[in-house]
Image (cartoon, rainbow, N blue to C red):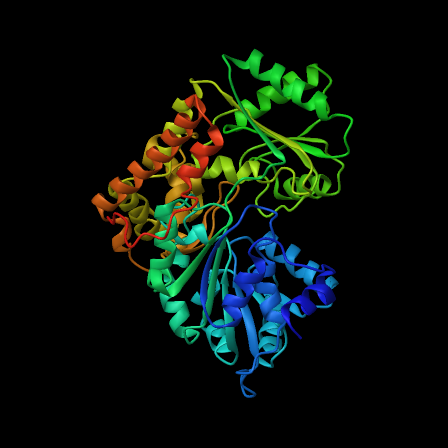
Length: 488
């Protein structure tokens, strides 16, 4: 079977799009690839097709498998379900499974089942998984959402930075890294974090432009003008069968606009982190099924969602970076039909984002204080929960999210393990603070990079020329991989 046969047999297409064929030939020939391709352009086929092609070097004692690293548990399930529906042996192993189900899938993987296996990079912390995957011949390692590798990216995951170690454990397999957005610095950092030289990996950059998305920026002053734009955009698409998303930074702002829209008799639902988990899941499912024509949401909504007919994405408050904005508007128009992407810019909203950046970049002293409380006052921290911790740290200022940031980073670096939802705290301290979180210079550089990413979005908003050309320049379309970037 050749790639074109597999494309037709399993996916029903007669020909590849863009550089898909060249990428597939590259990895089937044992060459590494970095793929930057717009949302909806078919990145997944670039590793799914090679997984279906028999290879001459398959080892009878260690059956071949394509291992896919993905940060999004929800997206894993969607992709695996779609592959199974096409008759392709695929599965995922993550924390959403019961212990019994994980053990069963471990056994099946070890026995040689499945052509594609999806896991998060954190799975490599588990000795039992490392033992199981060691029984398989990983012919291809696919790193999805590859911008998460880079600490300069907008969704850095520390376990992605262990990819050199992971690739060594897997026997240095052919590797393909894929993302929809990556600046030149991030592209270079991805290659470095893979343990490869620029001349060992080929860059396939298909650009970031999607002609069916109508990008627009409107400068506004106050809630009244924002509300008029939201009502107008919703009205233009009210006759369509598709959906729309209006993004807000703050829950209290979202709820304020929800009430204003109710007064206008505009039907909608709300999605944010203060909702119960079951309510969030219900709203997401209803959205996917087309029952929610308009969703007011915070940025967490949409992660892992692949809905084709989102007709508009409107940002009622400025996002935190160019990357975050472009990724969020990428959820619109995946069916190729015209869709609106409108950013409402009120200069007063910049203060909120600057504060968010500060909360996302705690200093070393704050890391020390949180660690001391959870490690040395563990009994009271567990008994009284997050509210007590906040009182010790910053006098119960609920909108200061540094505590949540630190707990998340401690978990990502393997310092703690557990949960901290609904104000309760159930964690176990596993190790000391890592050097990365104690390096003042490194943290200062990270803060500066985050501020510069927000500034880039402001420059785009105020740009008098061709905004698409500005976006192309920011994301480095057409450039070659650099050999180095500034390091802390």
